[in-house]
Amino acid sequence: MDVYEESYPVGFTAVDESGYLSMAAAFDYFQEAAIRHAEALGVGRAPMAEIRQGWVLSRMSVLMEKRPRQEEQITVRTWPRGWEKLFAIRDFDILDRAGIPIVRARSCWLIVDIDKRRPLRPQATMEKLPLNEGRDSLADGGSSLETMEAAGYHPEKLGERRAAYSDIDFNGHMNNARYVQWIQDITDPDALTKAKAMRLDINYLNEIKLGETMEIRTVSVPQGTFIEGRRTGDGQAAFRAKLRLNPAV
Image (cartoon, rainbow, N blue to C red; front, side):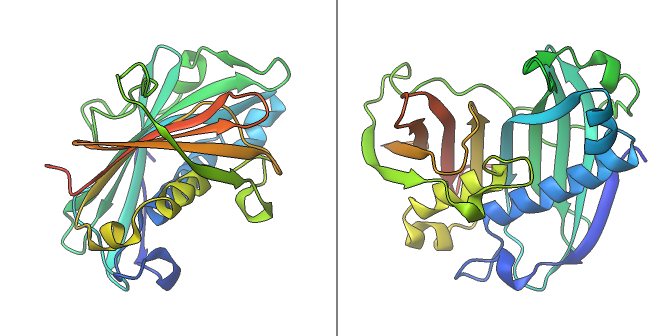
């Protein structure tokens, strides 16, 4: 099973007020597909846990060139794409009814030693999986986002947000798609609903646990909005993201 795919209509809870797929819902779709494909390939949560290893999402980039609308039939696909240094690469896309890719994504994962909490070299695991050479969905995705200060910007504190029960997943920390919901919640809702296309690049830097409070900092620049969440307790950055609405594609 080199490429995993599943088809279904866009559901009611996956759209925003515009009636079109939200970015957070796309992350949900990709997360579920990646889990099921990893299980089918024998590298899902249970077999990895048996050898005291686990998957940690480190970076993800999603480009929605066209947003599918509610009840539109779509096909979600995902496939492994080998590795680069410490990162295992997994690509995704969403096809419309005509089979045309309208959403494209790339993710970078770390394989970690559960006991030592350290990343491992991914070759031993990834060499057993399909390489899908030449099948690039979003080849420019997965890069590291520098701090806003390093980029020459001066962020402002937008507010604080506390990780609540509904943010936490089976692994005991905030789910990757919930970060995207937070980003949506601090973005101008009118701009989001009117956007015909969008791109989000996000780096997951430190896990967020139940009850932890994040200071949300943002800065708007011509090419988009930078968003960063820092733990109020120790000042450590938990995530860093860049959102672009209606980007040139």
